[in-house]
Length: 438
Image 1 (cartoon, rainbow, N blue to C red):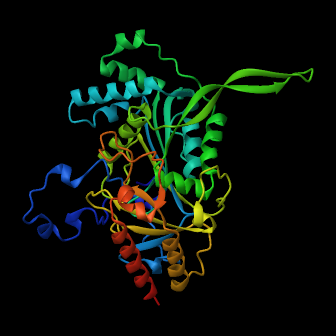
Image 2 (cartoon, rainbow, N blue to C red; image 1 turned 135 degrees about the vertical axis):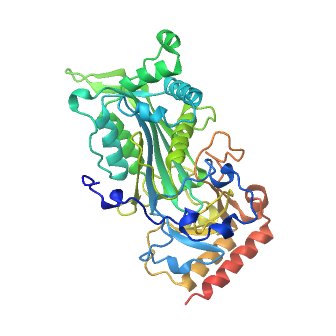
């Protein structure tokens, strides 16, 4: 405790509203209910937001929150990192966390299989540290001496989604295992013979190549990230041979194939990227307590709210724009139901959200907002999304990488499971609530 930089890390106990015994309401909560463990924690939907804006006193849009809906600045996006990094130093701690040796062996086999299907080789741990610093600004210190560092097998996935609290999230997930830890896991999984005959030879990726790829996500426009979050798009980074054209010493162009990191849409349910994300989030949920992030040596968790300096319109592509009569609007109305789960955050019950995409949020007033909503109603166009935490391989309501995210209000029943009359009445009631705001 004396060596910690953050005094909060030295606290031996603290108030946590998610721990019912600390709230003084144990009996009312328990009385009359037969509660099973899976009813308390749902790994498919309990990924609590690292940062919540509901209580932000400086947000000028807070005053417009009503029971029907809320307004958000589309420039604000929560950049999260979730990483499972197993090394020779922490592998035994990792394996001892399972309820039985058989459970640990099954999990280890699944992990090794996932890595064998798609991964890249990194030079050392410094590359992972640089990635986290780039994504969330968390400069993590090196945990091994230079002479102890070894190459790392890693798989990366980027997911966009709208949280139940209507936050835009872009999440970088990675599964990483050091060379030394992989050998231990192979022995533990009892697959040494199979490993000897496998063709496991993943391509190498330099730190510069990986950081350039990560930066390409961070440089995307507000509009592009917004659409990605609505459609819950997922991407994977992998090494591919691509054509490169260069000039030789005589001034002639030469084309050759070079191994470069590329970004692909990762929308196959059987993709190893899906499996890797389920693995990482499963371990994360296992060790997270309430709203307190886990501190196990094999887990890496950080987050940062990005807002300033994000380009509003740059990078638009054909089709990635407001259509028809909405083409001139700078505000987007979104309807989104939420998949039910325990302990949903504040704001989850609201099914309407107006996103401001032009960055002009300081001088909004009720009259201007209700007029903007009226224009949207006249245009007969609305956007839709599914609000859930993350990709889950076994989820019946998959909902990721959808192609349709805006449509006519008259088509609401087909896309949003709500009738046109119900939707228009909901929006009209929301306008009435906004008008009553002083």
